[in-house]
Image (cartoon, rainbow, N blue to C red; front, side, top):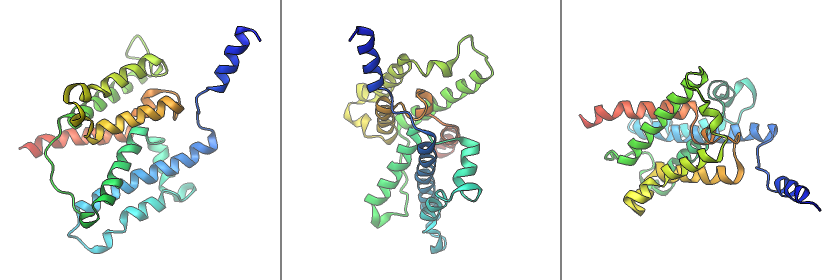
Amino acid sequence: MSVEDLWTTLALQYAPLLPTTQSLQWARHLLWSMVLTAVGLKLVARFYRRPRWLQPLPWLLALWAWVPGPWGVSYWLGLAFQIPSLSAAFLALSVVLHRASHRTSAYTDPPQAPQAWSIAWAALAVATGALLVLDTFAVFDFSMYQWGFSPAAFVVALSIALLPWLVSGTQGLRQTPVWTLLAALAVFLLTRWPTGNVWDALLDPCLWLVSSAYLLRRPWRWG
């Protein structure tokens, strides 16, 4: 076997586990179900003193996401926002796990002080999303989205994700946006999910809008 044949065999054996069309459809239902469950839990926590019939809302939203075709919410969310990113999925998972581990106060959302790294990641997500939007109009001399397919983009993203650990040690890794970003990068490294582009794994239009709303609310809370 020649060197070229050996290299081809290794490349095929360790090819990225990119999703098939069928698995991508199932993943769309699963990921939107996770995201909607987290959204429902947040809404119920905010309106806990309202009627008790609001409490099943997260689970009804989760089931609705599995309804196929135009009757399902995943169909319309998919048209508007495609599929949630890995970062959004892990953020939703963190909300669900937090509620599950605090069942005595599962529908209460205690006030928390602003976390520096959470604000920093939200600002970074908003800035990156804005650059990607401008990239669709060919504003730059290079394609930022196309650069997301290169290993260099992954290295830069991983370096930024490790900054809290370098600055704050293990305390920085305890903040939810930090470990969710690292988890998303780890899954992307192993599978190249969902498209082989690091931007699709870390950011999506829905998460960009949520990050923008999060930043806009900060001045009101500080005041």
